[in-house]
Image 1 (cartoon, rainbow, N blue to C red):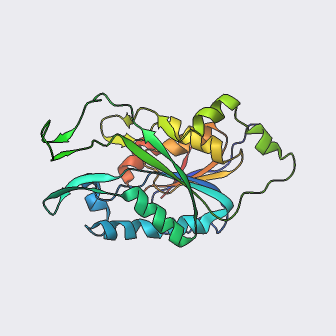
Image 2 (cartoon, one colour):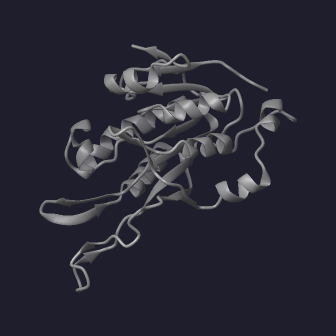
Length: 256
């Protein structure tokens, strides 16, 4: 069953997704700017861990508003390690987002640990072989999983649901907590999660004809997956250059 419907990207901030009505979206798959990562400092209105997460909190509230009952939100996020106030430390972005989303009303589920395949298996930071000032290297990110309300309900023998079934082999891999998938880049300018991540998440947590939203569309990786998997899609991306370079194609309508 092939479905071709809505494929839009709004070239604006996702802090107010006023184009989407309440309780109308079945799945959100996104990867926001990571708080306390230096390259994202200018993205946030604030420099501290708390200030930057307050910026994201507004988006999570909007996500809760637009999700339908039983809708799922998947958030790819990494913790940050950096020298701040002249001290090297780790900032727990994943834990902070979990707590904030639970405060909003989301139900929190076991996260997926995305272990990036690295070309530097023996990488470490700090004082080499001498204790005690070496640091554990970070080689994974999180895919946080939240649900609004109770389990989603379907009509008996719903055709879209049955047509969206995955195989036993896919289930055994996808629902394992650790995913070993290499990272990817679109050209030299922008890093992005690999296509396989949204491919899996969209098939795991939505059915054909559903609406998938990415509030931080970036290079439109989630949108491309939604298009190929016969879901509808709405994205938000504030960066004009990224929209022009990666999103403005025949498949997607850009709303400026």
